[in-house]
Image (cartoon, rainbow, N blue to C red; front, top):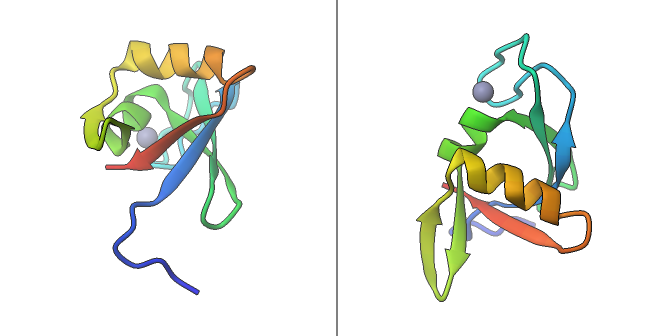
Length: 88
Ligand SMILES: [Zn+2]
């Protein structure tokens, strides 16, 4: 089953100390964002730069860009809150 047309959704899990970005393949990063692809259930790790360009946040029906700082604060908040973002 596919949900064509619907944006891909990810749940932010936390910041990870994994050093490879699965978005662009860059290695040697200090930190990555640990995300769960809610469609496939796969865990993915994106560098903060990639996460801020590849992801959008939905708020009151509109989609907004996410800054690098916002990604980090969402990751901190994700311990207690369920934080969902969408593929840009
Ligand atoms: Zn990347």
